Structures are given as structure tokens and as C-alpha cells.
Length: 492
Ligand code: GLN
Image 1 (cartoon, protein in one colour):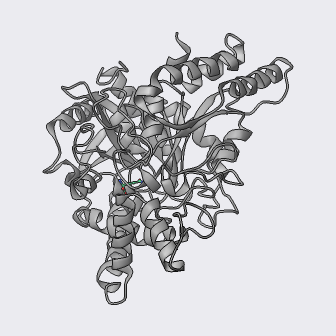
Image 2 (cartoon, rainbow, N blue to C red):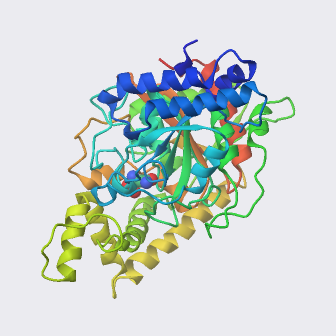
């Protein structure tokens, strides 16, 4: 088998038995990037090839000597460009941070280095993680590897495209309202956003701090568990990180579907199968539901009655948080500064922010500042916060009856580049199925479950209760097996 087709699990096994070296894997990935990224534009910056190979050789030498090795030793990885890295600029795909070289690594990056992975580069994204298509990058438009005329989704579009195009076996993204799961669905890979606070946000450049969560893009549920195992956990540097033990996710996936496991109890929230869902997405998901029932799982209808308020509440709250988080980019301390002369400090800040931020970021800062302004706070922010609580309560109720909920992650397959770019409302509406998991802070995973008639990947989402990653991954692994047994999805 070609090295670039292999899963994290298979690569680790091949490395352990000595049938392949990290230098060979790294070389294969570097060659793949060189051959395909000129067209796909998944990366904003890439590692120096000889330095990456030298790092791989050092790990191979350590392995030969029987020295201590990290759990993901020798595997290449790509990281979204809103996670701080000392050896790469960290731009958030914004002109504002084009030359920002962080003095520290994000905690999850530190964990990945400690696991002995090899960082092959930083991936493209929508500027400051605002968007759904990766078209809002100040640098390049990432293309969907399955159809170059289409978007890869966003905002972790670069990470999803890099995994789908086989440039890396796995990648890291971030998910504030679907940014890992939606591009995973559009690109035909697995994408997971854990519980809010499960992975440290230290070194993740903030968009909406009460929503942002680091996530994983990989080729299988098992690979996702292998990576999550390394980066989950409490971090004193992030006051919102959860101080809860990290269970053995890998073992949970391995044991999934054992004889001792009863059938899964899967809830289908009726609001997510209603108007607006394209038949292209509905068809494979209905086939999956039929296959799950045929295998003896309990699949029943449930309801998340506050769904209709979720999207407006999401955009009010995240814009409010963004307007406050992005106030720090003022041209004074770091980030872009416009060319002088200036008439005064206000002129300097105004021109720096006008030139440094793209249109979508400016729109959200304006919206956020408006909803937080005196006189409007109660009407917008406070009401949206109440909706957030009601959405969370809906889930609590649904989980009394079901282990997890299953529904589409996107209303349509990947859309054409340029199709929604100038119509922000239509773009926001494409997030309709993904934002609720972030409003409620719950873990969610997107799995490829079929193909559209245009041969575009379709994803399905599973959501579980807070901190249920082990059980959710195990359930996802069983659903993944059903998808593969029933022939609904095969990598092309
Ligand atoms: N599309 C959503 C937004 O623009 C989600 C983005 C994200 O998860 N970072 O807010």
C-alpha cells in the first residue's frame, strides 16, 4: 500500500515493525504536498523539506537505538494557522498577522511535539476562523480535492483538504461553529470537536472564546482517538480547560461493538431533517439509518425544539465575543500597522484595522459592537444567552432517552467557489446544523457516509453528552463499521 494512503494506526504499526521509516513517510508526504498543493492551496506555510527529513531521521535513529519515543513518533502533521507555533508564522490567514511569529507554542502543539510528530506546515483557513468556505483567507482560496471548482468548507478548509488530498495522515483544526466538522464532511474525512474545554485553547488565537475548541481531522474514528489521546487534558494555562481525567479513548474505540455492548440508542432530532435539507444529503443518511436499524440498533425520533433560534443566537454571541477579542489588533503592540504619516493615534488605528482586516471580519466586529452597545445589550446579547441555555436543556432532555444524536452536518454537499461569497446570510445559513454543538459545548463528530450524484462526499454528525468522548468515539466507530459494511462510503 502507498504510504500516503495509510491511516495513523497502520503507519504506527509499520513503523513499530520496522517495515517503514519516518523518513520515508515524511518524504512521501513532502512529495505529495509539492505535487498537489500548487493547485489545492491547503498550506499557508510549509516546513523546509530538508529540516523535516532531518527531524524524521533523528526519530528513526532513536527508534533503532530502542530509545524512548512519543506515541505518534515519526508521523507528519499539519496545523491550522490560528494555533501558535514558534517555528512558523501564525497568521490566522489575515494580513493583520501576516508577519506574526509567536514566542510560544499552543498547548496542543506542545503535546504533538512531545508525541514526536513532525510539523509539515500551517494550513489555510478563513480569516480569524470566520466563514464556512476558506474563501475568506487573505492569502489563497483552498480547493476541494474532490472537485477543484468547489470549496473545501471552512474554516479549517486547509486542514481538511490536506488530509483528503493525502498530504498528511491527520491535521489539527479549530471549531467554533462547525469549522472542523463541516470541512471534514465536504472533503470526505472524519472531523471531531470535543467538549468545550477538553483540549486546551492556550495558543489558539481567539475568535469567540466561549465557543472555540481545538479539533482533529483524520481518516478514521480510530485515528481520531489516537490523536485526541495526546492532546486532550487539563491545562493550567487555559482557565476554561476542564480539570477532568482523560479516559482511554483508544481502548474505548477498540472495544466498540464487543459482545457486551448492547445496541446503540440513536436519536434523530426531527428539526434537522426538515425543510432546507437537500436530497443529496438526505439520501445517504436515510440509507445509513436503515442500515443501523437492520443491524439491530434502536433509532428513534427526538426533538430539539429551540433549534430555530440557534443560528441567530450563535451569530449574535460569536460576533459580540469577536468584537471584543479583536480589539487588541490596533497597530500598536503587534500586528499590521498602516503606513504613516498619521494625523493622530485614532487615524493610525483606524487605517491599520481597515487595511489589516478583511471584509467579513470587519462585518462581524461591527455587528458585535452593535449588539453589545448600550441599549441593545438586553435585546440581543442577553436574549441570545438565554437561547443558548434553552438549546443546552433540549440536549439534556434528549440524552435521557438516547446515547447520541445523529443528523446531517451540512444542508448541501460542497458548493462552488464564489457561489455564496458575496451573500453573507446564505453563507451563515450553511452552518445551520453545526452550530448547536458549540452553543451547548458538546462533543460532536462528523463521518463520511456517502456520495452525492456529483461524486461529492456527504457527512453525518453524531453528538453526545458533555465529556462523553469515549462513548461517542465508540458509537462513531460502530456507525463507521455500519457505513463500511453497507458499502455506503468507500474512499475513492
Ligand atoms: N462558519 C461559522 C462561522 O463563521 C463557524 C466558524 C468556526 O467554527 N470557526 O462563525
